[in-house]
Image (cartoon, rainbow, N blue to C red; front, side, top):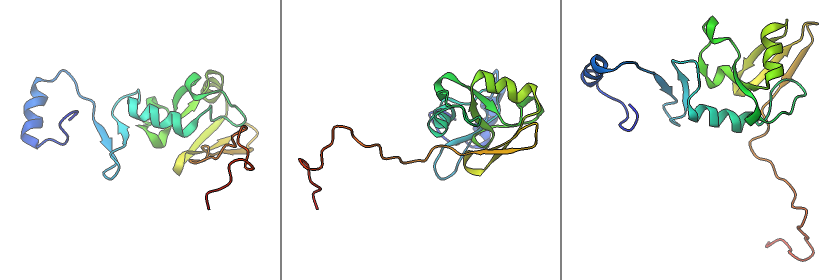
Length: 149
């Protein structure tokens, strides 16, 4: 329960009698990261994680920033797809429409890897950007700031 943590069965039953509705949130027992919720929209923490993981539209070749994309269910929610990190990805509006209204197919593999199957049956695989990237500082001059070792 938000703000309190896990609850015993008696407390849950008492609260359930008085509640207008419930949203179950399933978390990773080690990290505490929410991975599934019993609702259509992802939680704020899931959306934050997905934005960091995806960075941009995951359709092959598209680089529209995630903040300008929809969070899409790989397996549609209406077909039983869970609202979990393993079933969500960012797609821009155009590619979200393409996925749902054409013969493109998408399969999500572990680690957020997506396998897109084109109507021609050609397979395109997209991976989330790397977790750590080193970007050169254009103003850094190694001659004036040598390594400390």
